[in-house]
Image (cartoon, rainbow, N blue to C red; front, side):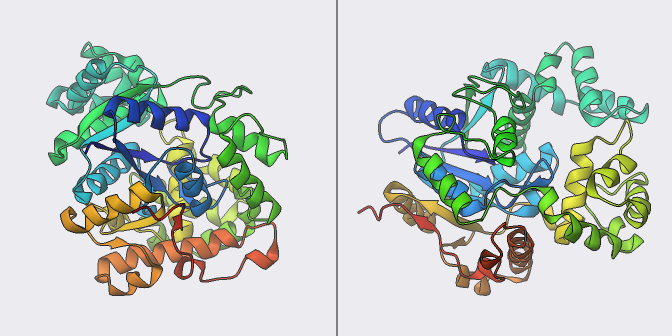
Length: 401
């Protein structure tokens, strides 16, 4: 059986994601399945997800995915390279995936493979390092280096293509037995603010924050789930809804705490420490730390890592377990196969986390703490009870055979 892994955020799950899954299954052929490794309550942009992870996972399974596993926060909140490597390692550790599928603005797998090869070459690394030394941001440095070496530098100016290259690099670096599938992105661009049947996640989040109706912009099954989240007061969630909590955490941190954060290099931790002591809100903090070299996305990720207590060493290597968020009947069958072929523990019940080793237990406890903080931002105070990470079981849409 052919099974493709998709590394995702689904913030929120929308029609473009459903098209990606459907096209992946078409390419795999009859009987093909899809496993998604999805970011939890905090995402790679360095901010809270608009809806809680179990709701987004359910939307994915109700709209074509078979199994959704959680990408733990230390990897979900990493740079593109580490984000891709962690997700790819997790897919490989399941022992059942034959393919890795990703969206792409370019859509040409040979172009993407060439860019991945060039980026990993000694010349590519040296030219990127030189541009960084001269003050360029990482994205700009990479793009300049690729252009100098004759690769398609436009690939590195497109968010999905940038991640696609990192997935391909991760597959090669890890020796993962995953055949790549590049699905050309359809409809609105990654952050494009266009109301369309394939509207971007950025547009949908903005609409949800404004209280607008998103009927017709997401799959019907997903829309029903989102409406339930809104009606019960569990969303939409944004930084604004947890701002005081975030700033209190930052102001209580020491210089050593900031120095222990992921990507705390070249004095960035010191800039964050100073800003935390003086700035009144998250936006002011971000812009006080930002420079030409340090882009906002990197600073937001570090801010979120600080909020959750994530340290640099937490995202080393492969995620130490796979947490099930949602599954259908085919997904349950896959879980049985993972039990036979996988190389990491699979958590189908929260209580199973108590049996993990010390490192894995720390990662789970980061998730539990993050969920406790995330739920404090729910509009409905009665939904904010603590300890939910230990009580909520996976969403099972049907039991299968």
